[in-house]
Length: 143
Image (cartoon, rainbow, N blue to C red; front, side, top):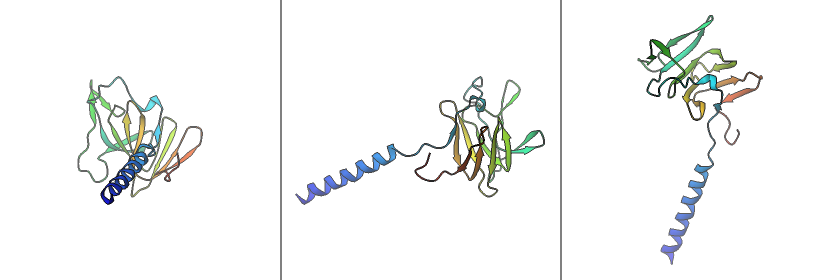
């Protein structure tokens, strides 16, 4: 009986853990088709840091990395292809969104053709084109 009770208790704990993971919060995602170029094959993904510079961007290795990858497809630089990772340095405006990163822990996003532009890590704010400010990382339990 003691053995059976412990097994049931263990199974209950496992069930609760699995249920909690199933309801885990999805990461902040920008669902705007401007953030993905679907004409680029999946294998062309970049991993870069982006910093506003005048009317354009400076592209460099992400913080803490010595190398970076800026994919090329048909003689064009590829930034917005599926699987690309962008680390935002400082404050930048792109497609009407303002990315404002913490200097010590910059925002990082990944292009995902199914989900959109998905927050990966870092601290900062995103201001949407309609003026809503989203602070990342989001507080636990909030969407």
